[in-house]
View 1 (cartoon, one colour):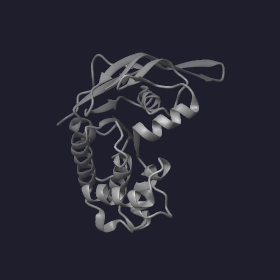
View 2 (view 1 turned 120 degrees about the vertical axis):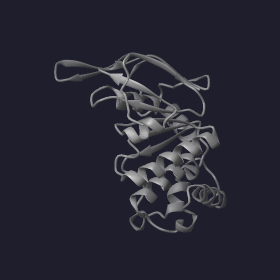
View 3 (view 1 turned 180 degrees about the vertical axis):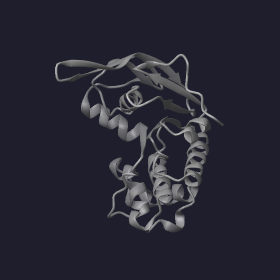
View 4 (view 1 turned 45 degrees about the horizontal axis):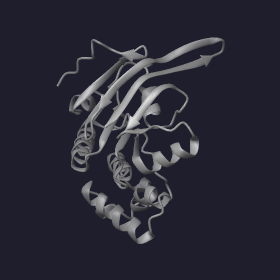
Length: 227
């Protein structure tokens, strides 16, 4: 479970203060898939970055499974490496690495042996339907395949939570549906919490629920998505 309370974030642009978030709070349970929704400038990307420990310059408190988020860089890096996974809109795969090497990268950072890295990478690639493409480099994979590799990479070290930033924005409708269902089913299988920032109604309606932001606060009249 992740609990965040009174999260506030202010940017200084020139001489003007911009309040990106204003005392935002909530609870997301283990294994939930939650969409962060709202128009551009609503604060969802800022909140996603804070929850993903990519931005530590904020006010408020956050706990993941009862452990407080650190404010010191080395401790934050360790927590990201061990407890969090990330999926990005542009996949962010390393071009010179094969699919299994990309998936194994978090395991390498965590000190796993090469044999364990490959074994675990192949196991999770099998779950996303790409074991036969394990030796392919990203430029030999379709966009949907690359995103499935990215999902495998995010889950290979069994994190408590995955942060996903617009994961379907670059995909066609059919591929997006496959990726959404894959994220949801694997999240439930592993008991992993997914927090997804999205403009995509295909993504939002498939999540367990949404947190809707407007002008840096929780919107009391959430967006209505067509199912």
